[in-house]
Image (cartoon, rainbow, N blue to C red):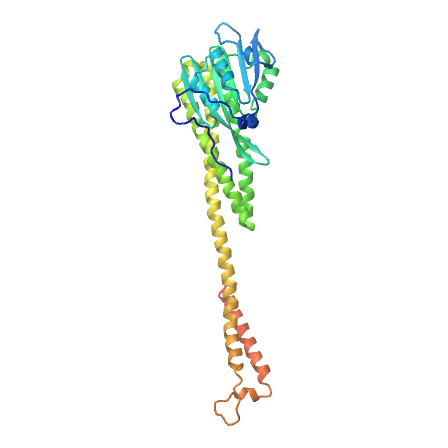
Length: 361
């Protein structure tokens, strides 16, 4: 069984903002960092090209709007260079290296750092949660996705198709990335809902131990989703409430739509959690009902055979003596054996008729 929540920690006493070395296991899991840069020149977005870390532009209010996307796990040296060029605070750099952070928003002067969790469904391993770090500076937006998932394919397509009409300001670009990150939860929840319906049908038809395992698996996934998606709503609310000076009125209106999506996501998560708890009760009730039905069937069979066993036990004693007044006269009857069988059959049929009248089966 995999751990629900995974996070990397510094040893106790380590100074805040210390960048630890990236382990070989992390590099193998996430892959080395690849840097992609797109510039907005002449009112239009250019193509997103791969660059080396040394080509990261400096954040300046006078330069063109840039979107820097980091795919993979950057080394401490690359993070320090990134922080120097764009003004990324050491604490934010530390959060990138120490994955599994709780979604949050941090304000550093005129820059903003947002950490979110993006869920995804793996067909073989189930639910996966990835950490996304977004940074908005004076004229640059940086997105860091330390793990293998690339959530912004659709955003790049929009930039290519709409050119100058799409995401022309830093706050507008940040909104587009936040909207994409939040909307990734909807197909995941659709998958969870479909599996809940399958488990519900299985519970009502023929529940097994495998059904219980699937139900507990869904419960674990919903716990993970709630842990990451509940704070996301708080993050968006905090952006609108405490940092609205960094957003234009038009962008704030669109940000409210992203907040509404986060509320819908949380409503679905809570509804599915309640359904999971209800299905667990239904499963236990169904298994209890099946056990009661089995016990009732066995009780009926045992009850029917009790008088038959008694009759067979009495005549199995074979007490026959010609001079004893206590001998069993039926042993010498010509029709004694068929008569005993007839009595036993009549008793069994009578008890079955009585149980049917009582609606025991």
